[in-house]
Length: 201
Image (cartoon, rainbow, N blue to C red; front, side, top):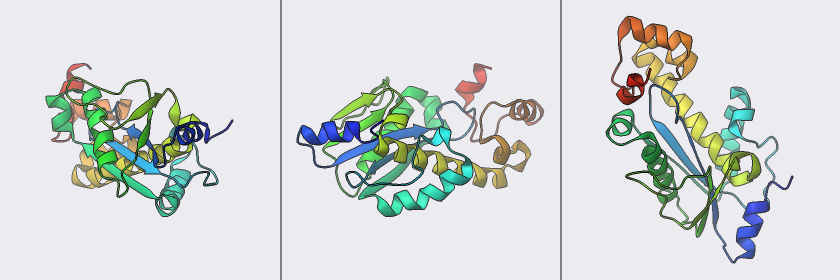
């Protein structure tokens, strides 16, 4: 598999600053959704780089500073639980990714987006882009973005575990595990829970 196929195709069309973009935290019952955007030097080899979901937390943590060091530009952004409730998770995902794109120190002229959606009800990807299903397994720059988004969100949830220790966010990162559901039944929601997600339980 050519991990640079989509970047090469974009370069062949004349694009010189191609960015990969992904998000993390669409499914949890608590916490923000994070977006990340990364412009890698064309063809840069980062040993171990892969879809964040295929990597252990230890490997993701190890790759995080390597990606930051190697990237020509990278950015992380988020949309919090309150705004997710006010809008919807698809819109929040799109906003988080577009905020990350906007936060890059070098403006990309083309963006590779993980997934098959580029807009929600209230937010959309406004940069020139291409959606790639399973892009975090097919594109080096999207894979790099997936790691930055995932690690950044996990670190935030570890901070929340200190602030709200009774929910054990360090164990489940806000996802709807059996433990998390049991603690929700016991304590009710805290300020970082997504109320609209709890209604679906």
